[in-house]
Length: 421
Image 1: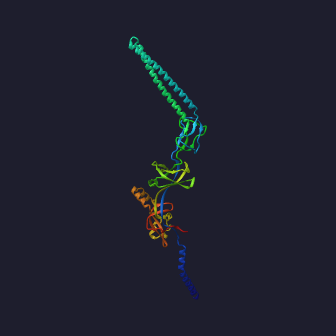
Image 2 (image 1 turned 180 degrees about the vertical axis):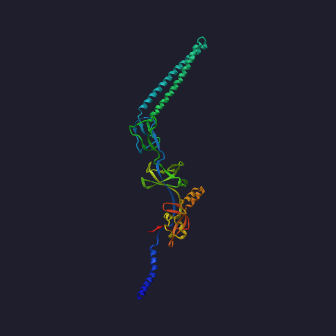
Image 3 (image 1 turned 120 degrees about the horizontal axis):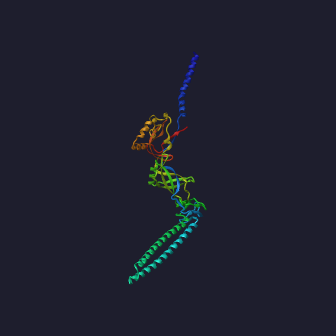
């Protein structure tokens, strides 16, 4: 009996001790297992939206220079990167055959001119004979018979025709001489514009064959030190933003791998309407003009381009990490907000086949309205031991921040961005 009583007393003492220590132990374990959240504050500042693309640097104009005549190259006066002036002789084709053709045609022309003088002399003599016969017949019709007068008359006409033929022969010989002289002049390949030789496709001693197709000898880029073009391909989803940026005369910046620490400035010069479809992706060429006084931008370089398409000043900025965060445990969220933890209220991607079919049958107006609603988002804040959702409307987005265009949040408010481990 005494043993049972003692055990009862011990159990009572243990129970009392447990009752006294339960609450502190519970608080200790709750504190130890309490979730700690990473947060970031809403800031105030400027937001600039960019559209990024890649492009290729090309000269504003590249002039291809060929040869009109065939023959061996006997003189080559320029090399890659040489700067030339209009009229400079770049190369010379062996002119001997063409010089011989000029000499031959000059001799032919001289022969034709001499023949014309001979015919004109005979014509003048024939005219004199005709006038004498006519005068004799005026004095006495019996002095010249009709047959003799006909012979004099038609001799004049024959020589007049020969004179016309001689003049035509002179024109023909002159044309042949001009052709030969032109071919001789074409032996000198000259620069049609001022510029820089960016490509040379011939070597000294090479023989040109221009009978069927004009061979390309040089490519000259005029004004390469003044301006170059950057040809970018912009996705059709962004081309509307680029059009607005061009109207607003917004700046364009780009870098090249050759000078990775330097940012180059440009401006949108042209948005071409000729689309390019590659693997069902439609893009549009956008031409950017950039100065190149120090010749750092060379043809063929790849440019990494950023188009400034929109900007706002002094607006609340939400960290993008807060927009990406969603609680992974429904027990950590207020009951009223538990249906929002997967972000399904604003996600545009259909969750079920029925939603996919419904979205496919939307009208253009409905699709436009749906796009506007995509800007409605939820961010999360600590509310005691739980999290609460706050609805906001987003605006422009940049690398780290997004504009809050609407929402019951103030600058400095702390938003949850993650869970501390």
